[in-house]
Amino acid sequence: MLNALTKLFGKAAPAAPSINGTQWARVEAGLPFLDHLTLADRARLREMALEFIAQKEWHGAQGLELTPGIQLSIALQACLPVLELGLDSYRGWVGVVVYPGDFVVPRKLMSEDGVMHEFD
Image (tube, rainbow, N blue to C red; front, top):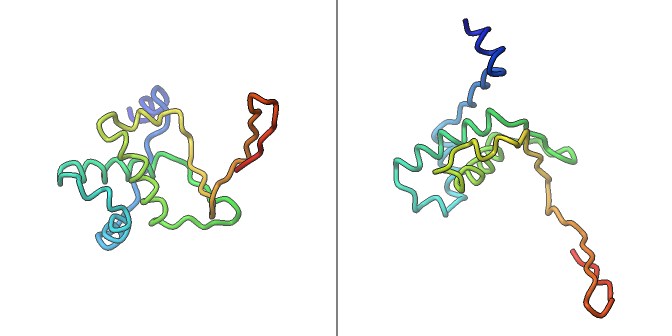
């Protein structure tokens, strides 16, 4: 029966990673904007973050090795804005690419006077 459902609805969701209490505390201490959450909201955010980690493909760019702490920090920050909306908000996202430094996109802008400005 499970195989038939999997074929009908797609692959089964991967298992959520195991994060211990020390890891949670360390990551959440670095995200002080989570302090305003109620205990119930924080529990929902934690659950959603674990599901987000399990659902997405994770890639470290330029040789960056992604630790569970990095993934957890990103997942918590990604899930907070959609806490009331749910993870369906990210259904079009396949994965997360993490760069080891600042991600800067050079930009060009033509002013009304016809002068081209280039900046980061």
